[in-house]
Image (cartoon, rainbow, N blue to C red):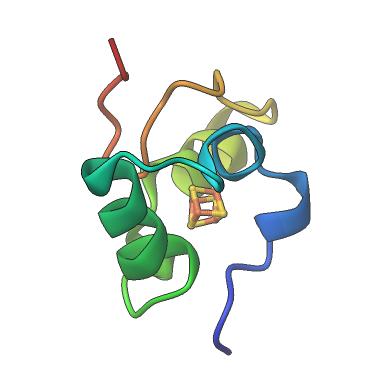
Length: 65
Ligand code: SF4
């Protein structure tokens, strides 16, 4: 699979997929469209709590300030 299963529903991706910010771009290419998608903390959050995480939570689990 080349893209995260949650891509179309993901608030982080929706909000930041057009970003020029290099850190966000890096996350998207590593997680959303890369080999680390199964390590995404947003996916884990959703699985554990049953609700989507805030849009500003990065795949690493930290919040964008
Ligand atoms: S941030 Fe996580 S849940 Fe959202 S699309 Fe990327 S890998 Fe999937």
